[in-house]
Length: 353
Image (tube, rainbow, N blue to C red; front, side):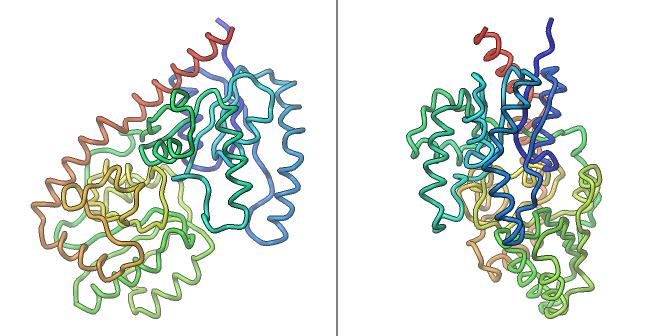
């Protein structure tokens, strides 16, 4: 049987993209080719250059399609690569909404343009991925044809994120695994832990990743006198992450907006107690006081109180981590979910012939 070929349009270095592509290769035996913008997005001049590169992207992708003859094109982000997929001329396309709406920031002057682009991508797509309910809800509000929408997370590899935890149960060993960007509000997390420090509560805080806020966050940790208890690892290999999670008993994440967080799934699988911001993307997975805690955005005092309460209630924490592991095994198992997605792609390809 002929090996099926997929063209992936998106940033191939991203963990979500790697999971998507690897899953299709492993469970669908697809050959994956890829294309992505080469110009970095940070800096005014670079953003202008990236825009020019994007304008000419349809020419480049059509040339690749002519040479490679893929059976299908898949793309992440409905307002960028998803739009390119809609323009590429290939009959079968699957696009994935990465954020709650992909229309961020909502007050941007480019919002109307992004909305037009997204609607066009939705209309042209054969299949639309909503990695979670929050994305499906936004699609429903945008009058998307929901018959084309597959609501299913890619999941995480439970053979890597094992059901073991070696953290000291008598100490707060917290971890943050989000990129160091303003949207993830690391400053709020540091201020919360500064309250713990003032109260004389011992802790260690590991902040993983890189981003534009790295130096300012390091400076803030010094200003708050907690630099000795905070470790900034910088960017790490994804293969090193499971062990770091298993050495932690609290997972903290305070984003302003969220789609579906693989980072949250990884922490839940690794027996970390989750305390996250009270936004729609997190409400899909965390029920306050049941299997974690939801904290008002930007409220570092509430975050500090939640950490202290959870630490002082180990029975609740223990029940929570057992429940969360079972939940991830049932709903976010990479081996199961990616097999469903790969089978769906084969079904679409076969039906189009």
